[in-house]
Amino acid sequence: MLRFMTAAQAAEFINNGDVVGMGGFTPAGAPKDVPTAIAHRAEAFHARGEEFKIGIYTGASTGDSCDGMLARAHAIQFRAPYQSNKDLRTELNAQDAHYFDMHLSQLAQELRYGFLPKPKFAIIEACEVTEDGEIVPTAGVGIMPTICRLADHIIVELNEAMPATMRGLHDLYEPLDPPMRREIPVYHVSDRIGTDCIKVNPEKIIAIVRTNRPNEVGKFTPLDETTEKIGANVAQFLEDEIHAGRIPKEFLPIQSGVGNIANAVLGALGENPHIPPFTMYTEVIQDSVVGLMKEGRVTFASGCSLTVGADKLQDIIDHIDFFRSRLVLRPQEISNNPEVARRLGLITINTALEADIYGNINSTHVCGTKMMNGIGGSGDFTRNAYISIFTTPSVAKGGAISSIVPMVSHLDHSEHSVKILITEQGIADLRGKSPIQRAHCIIDNCVSPEYKELLRDYLAHCKTAHTPHNLALATAMHREFIASGDMRNTKWENYL
Image: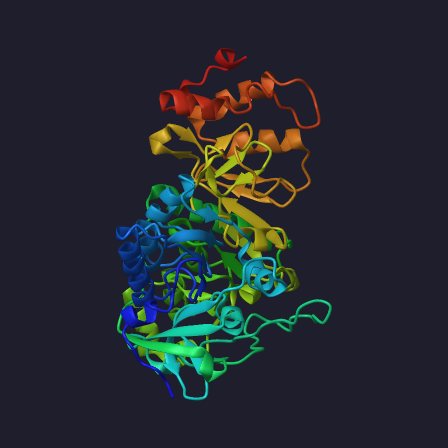
């Protein structure tokens, strides 16, 4: 028998020291009411002078009702594998909560391997739950199949804002673990290999909480001249690759990261008449994809979540038969799987926080120390891409920061995995180039004009070597920003 109760009653099951797995991927499909109730429970414990912190696994980031509420309640002992909430970020950088920044494709299997503490509870959002233990996710999957299987107990938020007609959007599949693992049989973007629901022992479902809550997906920053130019540069590069015969004329599936640059890139690809209609094999399906599908420019999209605004999600729900034949949502260890990425020949497009003149990428840490969000799925895709592209605006903070520096302050993706770097300034094709050739290519094509001579002068201060660096100066631009607030004030002689 299904056990219905309030969020506050469900939260009573969770105690200090428990480990909880959350469903969803980004705010799409993330639970809302029960995490909020757990946060209130933690605040009550703390008011009595009692400890209350829990370990949390999620698919990726969540909404403010989950990460934000729990962070503000100081209720997080540890967190993995990705986040984007400002209050949680503050907790992590103050070391008030521990953070395991992980490749998203690896979390589910590392839980199964026993490398990380086992979740006692799974808290998930669903649009349908049946008496015999069938659970249909909503707009995001994440690690739901694995945490539902591993957890001792499952709490379901049955979200009435997400209709049961969403059944059929999902393809839920867990690979076997070594030494029994076989190939993942995805040979085309549209292949379905699993089930349309998660099947569990119904006795594990200890609570069902009725909710009616929209996803907490925020609006992306409107496109501006910089992001539109980055998008146009990506589209031009891919058009040139088709003409050169380095990309098949049928084109290849696209993987794109999340954010306004990714939306600009997809918009530019859709508008370019020389790029044929294309498919996507990615983790996050964003607003731009919905419009491109209706226009016939995107023919099929496989992802882990529908991270779209409320109007776009309603459009999908209202035309579910159209989109069900053109969309599939998978667990992240399948959507981000390196084996599948290499087999399908993905063109991967991800955003860098910082790059250096040799093509190394920092995706995560401001000035090498402060966590921004996390590596997410960029590593899953970059190393296994047909062509790996990183994009970034050439400057930040009104020009006070150059996004391209002598040496990245934190390394997430090495020069060996990065083929193309694109800013609004231009395109640096790093394939088949030595380190010094890459440095000149990046400075000439991608660096903002106000920083070109500064970086050329850096090379002049380096002794000849395979990868020239002056270790006394390699982080001088970062140190200058910390000291004066503007990298343009850097004078190399002050740091020798």
